[in-house]
Length: 235
Image (cartoon, rainbow, N blue to C red; front, top):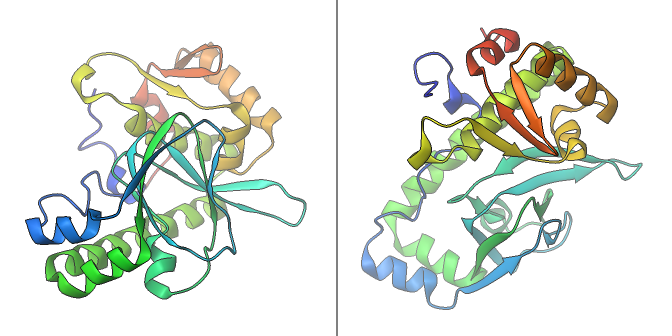
């Protein structure tokens, strides 16, 4: 089921088209001249907060969590990146350290593009420049909405909203009429929602009792996305 028209997913999700799509041939050649593709296992670190970037990462396939650690070493997940997303480019553009960390949520295929190739392409490509500016603006709006979520919503509402967003990320376009399975650990889900693991388990149990979701091990199957939208109480 599509949620288009009943929930503004664009306010909570990065754009679903790559900034690299349909770039001129000369720009693609420059950008990908020295790219290196690597497979990351679940939990493997892609980059760490406060380290200096040597390039950017293009998520060819899979899902990645972007997160920060507090003083006690607890994770706070900022965003779940999906296939087609760029990682680490903000720090390259600002010539600064990474402001957060990134790790694979599942088996991922990621291309590393050296900093020099990325900057050279940005300098010569007006199309890429415009796309990056639009992407930066949109991502800022998404992250601003996420911050507002923590100050204005209850844990139950936040969990419902994150399940709606995750449903879109895990949705398989070719299987539009099948229930969507969210494959995420309860620890990662609680870090994304910003609450204790026990709270997430308790609320998920209530959702399951009311047949809003079903579970298979760690997988969460969304059965009634309309009910989740109602619970999220998005205005």
